[in-house]
Structures are given as C-alpha cells and as structure tokens.
Image (tube, rainbow, N blue to C red):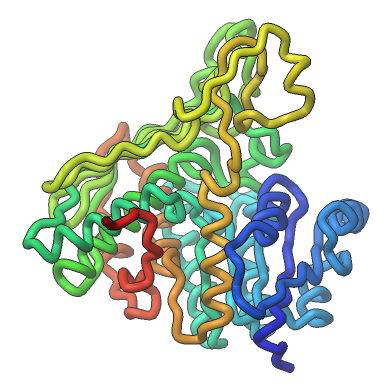
Length: 425
C-alpha cells in the first residue's frame, strides 16, 4: 500500500536523546510545498516510554514493537534511533517491510558477539561486524529501500560550505583536501546503555570519534567524485582507545561519568588512498560540556568549523538560576559565569538538514542521500579496525579488504545535490 506522496508518514524507534532530536527536527525542516509530515508511530523497549514520547511530540500512536509498527503504519521514512544493539535487526525489518527511506543513527551496528555474551579479539569483532553490516545493506538493496546513514556531522552547514568550495576549486584545476582534523567530546554520555558494550558497541572511539570521521570520509568521497569520478576511500588506520578516568583516583571523576567497561579517550589517524590524512579524537573528558569542531586544510585554503561552542554568542550570568531549564549548550554543567550559548542547536548540529535530506529522498525516488551506505560501510570498517590497531599498540591496520570493496554509484553522495549555503554576489 503506497502512501500519498503529499503526505509522508514517519516512524521512530527509540525514545532517548536521538529519538527526541529526530522528532523535533522533523518539525523544523524547511517548508516543502504541499507536503505534510505525520509522526505516525513510535516504539520503545518499554511501551510506557513510547506512550509518554508520543504524547510529548504529538506522535499518532505508540507501539510495543518495531515490526508491529511497520506493519500497521507502512511508513515512508523509518527512523532507527534506538540503542545500537537493535540497529541491524531494525534495518532489515524496515527493508523487508518496503520502507522507502531508512534513517539509521550512528554507529551502524555493534559486534553481534556482544549481545551473545562472547569474547573475541578486535580482528574477529571487525570481521563479524562487517559481515553483519553487509547482510543488512544487501537486504536494503534487495528490497529497493534507500539507507540514509544519519551522521549529523555530514549535514553541518560548514561541511556543505567546504563541499561547495571543493566544487568551485575543482573547476579551476584544484580542490585537493590534504589534512582534516576533528573532535567530538563531552564529560560522559548520560545514556544508561553507553557503558554497556553489549548495547552501545563501544565507547569514545565507537560513539564519538565516529562523528568527525563521518565528515572526513564524506569530504574525500565528494572530492574524489568531483576530481576523478569515484570516491577517495580510507586505506589504513592507526588508533588508541583507552580508559583514562578508571585508572585515576576516585576524586578525579568528580565532574564526569567514569566509564567502567568502555573507552573514554580515543584517537584515530586515517590515511586515505591518495596519501591525505585525517586526525580525529573522541573523548569523555571535557569538563565544560560538549566540544565539537572540525578543520579542513586544502590546496585552496583552510576552513575551521567551530560547531559548539563558538563565540558567536556570549552570555554572562552571575547566578545560574536565571537560565532556568534552558539548554544553553549541550551538556554544559553550569550556566553560571561566562558561557557561549548555541541557539537552534538542532540546526547547528546538522539534525534538521539530515531529516530534510530524508524527506527529499522520500519525495524523489531518484535522489541519493548525502550520507548513504558507502559512508556507513567505511565508518564501520575504520572504527572496528581502529580497535584492532589499539590492541596492537597503535600499529597501522590496512583497510583494503573492506574499503577496497567497490560500491555502486547508488551508494555515493551526488555533489550536484549539495544544498548551497554560501551566498553569491
């Protein structure tokens, strides 16, 4: 049963932070003439949570299972924003139900051995994780669905600006990205499942460094397509993933959530097939709240994106009570003193652009997501090889077995669809 293209039905799995920003973002996307968007269903591991979420966000109905929700609603867009351990199952359920666009939160999935209670070295975890991801992506393709890998760092306005500059530079015979550097950090996730690898899949490398990694992979894809007609892919990776706070005196963790089972600091060095480099960090050691930034050095210039915080807005409060319950900046521990508020955080962090891309894909069967199966695949290969490198004292791990695998154009971003964000004279 096909829905009227002028009325798009959206379903959401998960009622935590990701589910919340997903629901909010759909209400903020740019106006699509003559199109209405219904948040038709939500599901959670606990029906009560789904019912509360539905009431809060105006979702039509709450469900106690993902499969039941798909069968009842026939959504155009299914947003998988639940705990990482359910991602693979839900992707395949959505594809088999004929969903047009599947929005999959990052990271793509977790090592299947974690929920089974198995132990294995990082090389084995990588191989089995990639095999499961291959199964999920083949299921999506076989059923004619499209996967939007919801890496919000790809959808930052600053990343779109870099892509625009790349396109203009390539036309002048330049446009080579040389060095990319990025950070995603705060003082520890509040999600209960984060410190449980059987649910989260890992710590700062898996769940934080993956964000700037997504930007770096995307820009090299775009560069390669513009310059040579095919994406530039990662060739090898060196990494560290460790637990800093767990090894310190108890007082050192006063202002943090101290991880007992997952890494709280990670560093990735990615070398691409063209010899360019990306240096990426993820950590749970930022005492002052979220720290997101990304930098690109190219042959035409340098672009620094200070996502959050930046000094566009500055606030001084002698008393934090004046801020009431406003979120001035994500995970800011106190509003007292000087701070740098981030108004319209969902726009600044790329969530609105991300969901707008999902809507565009649902409306146009020929459209490819900016962040699609190729980005999900290469991200998973890099982070899992990163853990393998960390086990081998940061020795480089080659990626040819995975990132040398050819992906068809349907999985690539299309530079022609990059939304203009820079004003022209």
